[in-house]
Length: 120
Image (cartoon, helix red, strand yellow):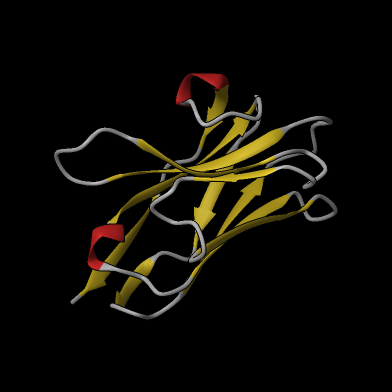
């Protein structure tokens, strides 16, 4: 099992930017990674995913054009650059590792989450 740890969350005004990081405890070949989020009273939803090589990336429609997922396998770290943030982006953001997918059930490893709050 791989331990994942998120960082970079915080409070930002609408229109601002944040960059989340997710550090993995070890390198695992062919290990896709993704970001999910959960707002109060709502189910966990897919945000973005990236394949092991970085050659495939997928985004939820709600974040396309605003968020960018990337990874640095040399550092065992994945990133989520979030621009033009909106109040509806407020949620706990989780990173996950496993098979390239938009479904949470395809991921075996999860971080503890980092809070992102966007004020209007």
